[in-house]
Length: 324
Ligand code: PEP
Ligand code: MG
Image (cartoon, rainbow, N blue to C red; front, side, top):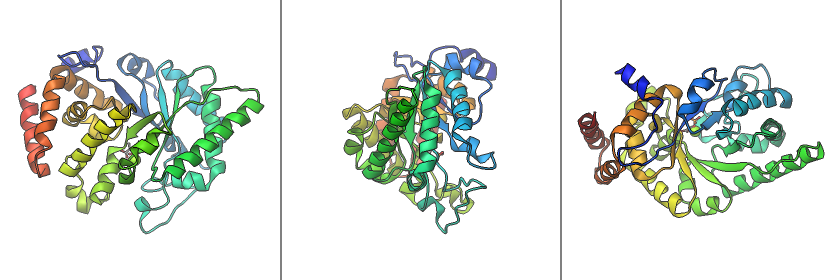
């Protein structure tokens, strides 16, 4: 089976009824298999910038960051690379920037930290912009957004970074900017967000955790953490529909996108792209190549009427086996 899937890796991620489903990768550290990956994907859907920050002893300088980012942008060019601004806090601590809180997932995290430390965000934004000079494939993603003000503040800093670079003689257009949809509040402000940014990227890991009030890392409640909870699926389906009405391209970069059955559901809901860890690509591509968009849509219709995760999972399992 592994050989069959490997052979399919160079074939398009297209359903039997002709629907192209762009697949992207999530990255963090330097990707040494860029050459192999590049022809098989539509870009990098999520570059977690905190990952390289976690293995240094201090905040990397603007120059050091620019070098790292350039590697990603150049490696994958001309494909788009979505770089997320620092998403520390929650479960991701930097040894040289400890955050001690009773409820870290509800605390100082992601954009909340970087807006309180604009000097950190400015260095990162300038490094990203510098790295993108001449390549034109940078997109910037804001994590853990809860309030519209946060987006406005981040955009102001981005514009300031652009001005500062221009003063240095580096003239760049503002890159496309997106917001992570991972705090439930954003589900109810899509229109206001759409007026400000160019794309949405759904963090299904955090969206699940926050919708269900279940810590994504606590083994005691691991059974309750379930992206197939009917409420999570209903929220995702509504989000896909609303984003498409608003004409905002929307992808999913949480673990659900890298699960073959989850990927089919997301495709059926109407998401525009799926971003996953590279090892998940073969099985997701194989699923997409075997299941028509119309069947995936039908499946979504069926599972949205089911009241428990158990029923959803059992139905998904049955359909999935039948499709193999
Ligand atoms: C998510 O929350 O689904 C996500 C992709 O971001 P992270 O896992 O880095 O929080
Ligand atoms: Mg997240």
